[in-house]
Length: 136
Image (cartoon, rainbow, N blue to C red):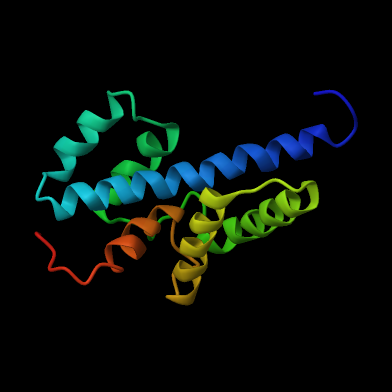
């Protein structure tokens, strides 16, 4: 990894991607849900295509089942990482528009009392943002 501290920097950079990919997976599945696409079929198609990600593979099934109460990563725990990533990006002067939008979703999850839930709950957070009637 190079000089001292690069391991920590890479952990923050990796968690940046985890945060963004998790939110992107949630947003895509909400889009599928609102379009009336069967979510099990959507997840199957998405995980086998070019748009797949590890977060879609790992958190997607939780999102489809809307099962967030047996967390592998709690929103309250991940919030610490989100704060550290934001501070790190500011420190090095890196613009992070996608991460900033994503961080707001995790903050909203906390505001909604979802701190003990899995980070996959951003699916429910995003789904709750739209005033349109749900298809299911």
